[in-house]
Length: 338
Image (cartoon, rainbow, N blue to C red; front, side, top):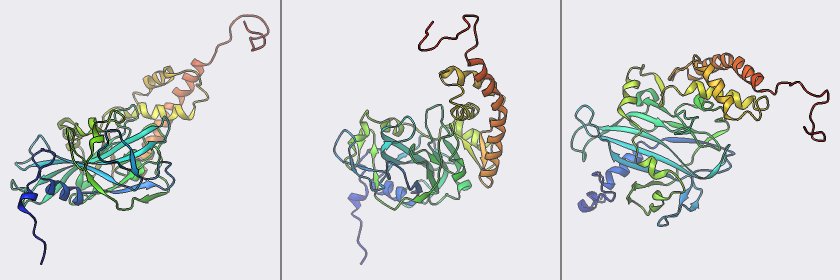
C-alpha cells in the first residue's frame, strides 16, 4: 500500500512564511532548472555548506542547489503567486577580481490555478537570471516562461565558468563586460536540493544565510520581479528575453572594448571609461534579444556597438597619451630624471 502522509507533518511551516514545507519542496522539485557548468571551472561545481555553522564552510563540492520559496506580494489575476529562488553557491569566485565564496541564483514567479493551494496546479509566469548582479557589468535577464518553454518545468541555465553568472540563453554568455564564455559546458549532475528557508527562519541548518561573508541574505530579501520591470517586459513580444536593468548596456560594451585595448590606455584609470561612455550614449541600447535568433541578432548588435565605439576608444587613448613638452633635447629617463 502507498505510504500515507501524516496530516500534521503536511501542515508544518518551518520558515513561517505561510507556505508549508511540503508545498515548498514540491515546487522546488517541479521547477528545478537544468544547470550547465564549465568543465574546467577552477571552483569545480556548486558546493554544499556545513549546516548549523554561522560562517559558510564547504562540506562538499557536490553540485548541491539551494532553494527559497516565499509568497509574492502581488496577486495576479485573482490567484496566489509564489516566488522561487535557486541558489548555486560556490567555494570561490575565480574570475577577474575573484574572491572567496560566491552566491549566485536564478528565480521564477509561479501562479496557482486556484485559491486552495493543497490541490492547485502551478504554472510559471517569468524567469530571471542574475549575471554580475548590482555591478557596472550587470547583464541580468528576465523573460516570459513561455519564451523559454519553461511554464511547467525548469529551463536550461548556462553558468559562466569562473564568475558563475547565470544566463537564460547560451549566446548571451559573452555579454556584460566581455569576460564570460560558456564553452565546454556539461550538465550539472543531479544532486541535493536543499530548502534554505527564510532570513531569520533558516531551514535545514542553513544558519550561514546571515553571514556577512557573502550577500546571500540580501539576495533572499529582495524580489526579482518588481512591477516596473514586469510592465516593461509586457510591452515586448513574448519571444524576447529582456535585460533586467534598462540602459546600462552601451557602457558595458565600452568596458569590454576598453579591456581589449587596456595597454593603449594603461595608466588612464576610470577617466578613460567615463570619457568613452560619454561618446557611447548613442550606441545600440536595445533591452531585449530575440530568443529564436539571439546569437545572430546579438552578435550583429554587438559588432555595431564595437564599430561605433572603436573610434572613441582610439580618440580617448590619443587624448590620454603623454604630450611632448618644450624642454631639453634629451627626454627624461630613469637614469636622467627631471
